[in-house]
Length: 127
Image (cartoon, rainbow, N blue to C red; front, side):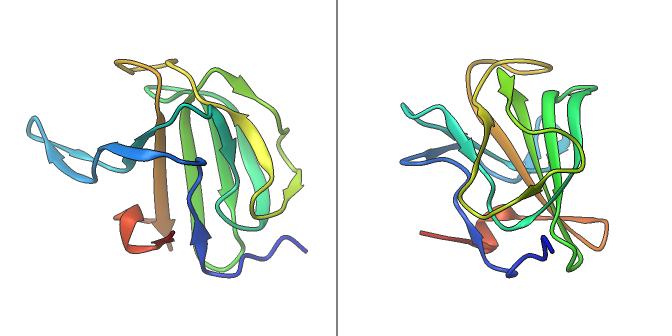
């Protein structure tokens, strides 16, 4: 139950990248930032919500464990619409884009972790 497919969909609908993964200001930007006129945030794959709350720097944040070595993180949300322990399906709405935490405008900060190591999300996302 809640096992991911290993293929991720975009966590925003009609989103565009406002800031990519990589070094930024001498620090690693561990994810990809998306902006969109559609503020709905959706689960990038099936999984289990292992964190839904406020996380330092990320503001309102959701972490989904896809039970296949992958975890995805969704940060700076204005609203969280899932609870810890919930099984979510790929494409299910889990929250609303926002500007909480260490953020400079309304966007989604999205991270992909594989076996605890941070990855470039754009390597995994399929349009």
